[in-house]
Image (cartoon, rainbow, N blue to C red; front, side, top):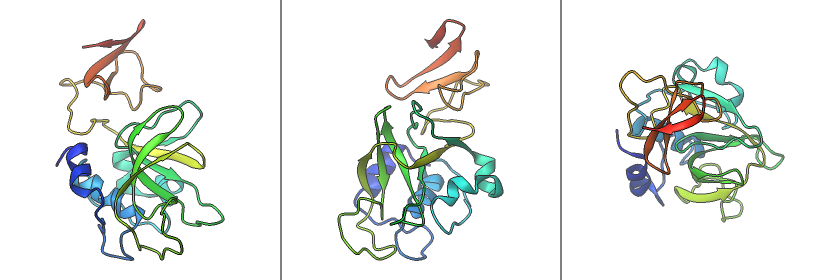
Length: 194
């Protein structure tokens, strides 16, 4: 496995065609990232990217390794999460991308074959390669996060009970803060750095 940053450096501006079917699509980025960075093999194929979220419960491999977190105002997608958009009248498949960083007002994602592809009349899979793009949270269904919540190349303290997100943490659970590069534990008085 490699780190998030190394994966981005290697793949940025290159076409990622993980499954070798229909060219370089948004879902190919998820399959390749899951294998290379998270060590997850065999995420089920999809018809449309929205299926990652809408059919989560019926996808055994995906359900085993990932939580599906429904977007609610105020939630922030964690780095490395698979962010999933609903279908629209112009895109019946939806979209999926990897969160690079986020705030309450928006997020920067790693995507290809996306909504903002600057080429008009793009054919399915006719991607310009992996790009970083900024979005607000419009039309986002939610995201998938690893169940063990290991943050890209970082291991929690031995035997730690790790929270899925800082919004869902329970007292006594650990959370990794990407900005400070440090582990925290939730206590009755709030998060404390280790």
